[in-house]
Image 1 (cartoon, rainbow, N blue to C red):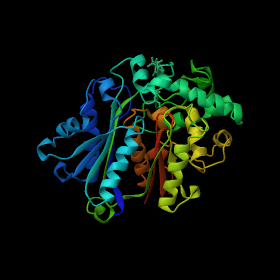
Image 2: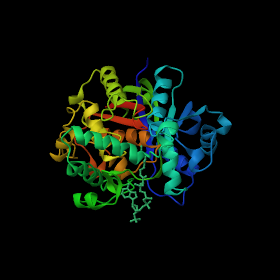
Image 3: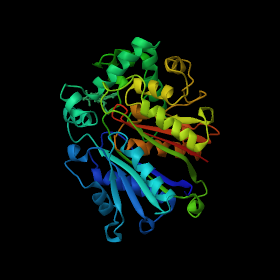
Image 4: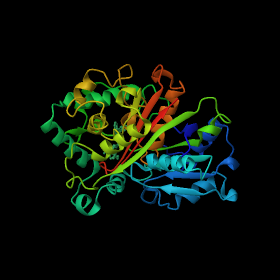
Length: 387
Ligand code: COA
């Protein structure tokens, strides 16, 4: 297997982007990544595009070909493949690109993610997202994603010492980080009172415990490490790429407050990289709801079960803490265009490792991790990146 490096990264701003189409979002992110890598379109050997539900959101399928065409690469006949794993589509798109390069089959590969969610109303959007759960056993019974994660939160708070305030502090921290990220959907700091007084969505989750509905795209370019310096002075090495799956329904799980796929993917990633939790300088976790960040920190092994609330309250996960979590603002404040999120996480870690993260820069960052979840944990992708 060859070693793989990220040689360029680009991301659109995230938010409600009424003035931009799905295809233009992708083209913008792709162009930024290619420019960053100093790579021209003709040099691309293959493309992978993470996208969850363009069919439901904009009534468009056949996304791989569409993207290659609008990127101006149809006449080069570049192989372009859509990757779908609900909200983990981006993480799996990155993993496919890494596998393609590591295997020696391809050299210069674009891994991207894109979603345009706001062209339909909230109801239609929430229903499309519910397709990431089991439609027959969960969706038909009325379970939405806020509802499913609320069940996880109820179970967790019944069994472990997590207070409503500690849960809210996850959102306060992520908005603080988002306020320092120029691509974030929400760039304003919030107080704990704002979270606690926001509308109840699914008890105990309130509006500010939820990631929003978002338009956006992100792209990175990967290449064999041995060729990376042809393109950049600052290649970011892919130290591990891991993936795991679990039951799609929550009720079939051994324990709904532990995402076993996160535990498995995390362990595989640490083993592949030959590293442990103490080596990680910062981590982008999948905080689609505040409770998801609490579970992720524990399930990846950064603290014991039941400790992440205290961890958060003590500032350990803050920008200036021992383990900064979601320096981008996470899904909560940066936004969550579902197919793009996994690539945005890689974009954020790349920026951090290159020392280009501006007001949210972690000084001396050398190793970062990404954690991207599909559904309530039926698919998980974990990557470790380093300089
Ligand atoms: N956090 C903070 N503010 C939010 C927000 C969020 N998650 N979602 C919406 N807002 C804000 C909007 O900016 C808007 O503010 P404004 O009035 O100042 O412009 C206001 O709240 C109302 O926005 P609206 O779009 O009408 O909200 P909504 O009630 O339609 O949707 C949720 C709110 C929580 C239902 C929706 O964001 C949601 O479903 N989130 C979860 C998405 C999800 O499940 N993703 C997959 C996870 S696996």
